[in-house]
Length: 294
Image (tube, rainbow, N blue to C red):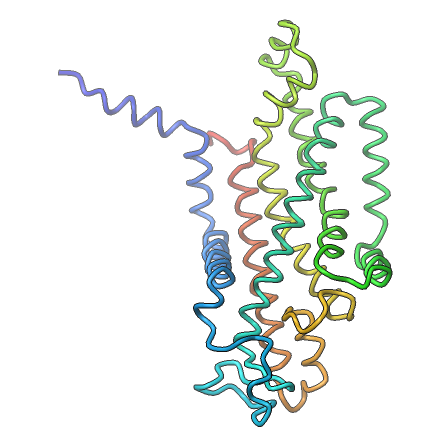
């Protein structure tokens, strides 16, 4: 009697996603980064359930600037607010801005990268010149100017982050589509009379899902750092909404005597950005088409 399970198992092992998953799991730093990022997302989602106090309520004015204790794990800030609650709610702001800006980045970067990669020629030249313009403009300086003109806020930060975040997504998609546009399945679709828009939409973009995912993940830490920088400089999300950049800005004034006011939000931001970057780098290595099947 013939065993039919071996061919099925062998076929499953040849699946490129299986090799990508194996490569990702072998990258311990990426796995740890993904776990930490998952925990941070859960903390942000369930913030009302895991924080004991309202992050904006000045309920502990008599204990202002108190150091970490059993009652207040991260201490109390200068306005009598529980600092642990503000740190957890600050994750909501940073992650929301990061994911939203990354989403808008891929919505802009995918079509532009697809057009540049498929049509080439003058279309590619124009898009690459636009990318060069955005590449030479310092994002923080442009963000400061726009933030000062619009007085900051969620919408402004998301717009600014997406304005500069789409460039990397565009380049990744462009490179992938240029590599695929001469493949047999594209030529077959062209021979059958498919329009360029149909080929891009139904064949090339679905086959470029790897760089799209990578571009999305890597755009998140950039947006979070931009939000923290603008909030630190006073043109980000306005108070009393808790943001890590805003808390760092306030904590700097008390750094020498009340270290916790600057250390905890700085550590939260650093851990989140590092975890997201490690996770994104791991995805990039795992989904790299040049490594599939090895």
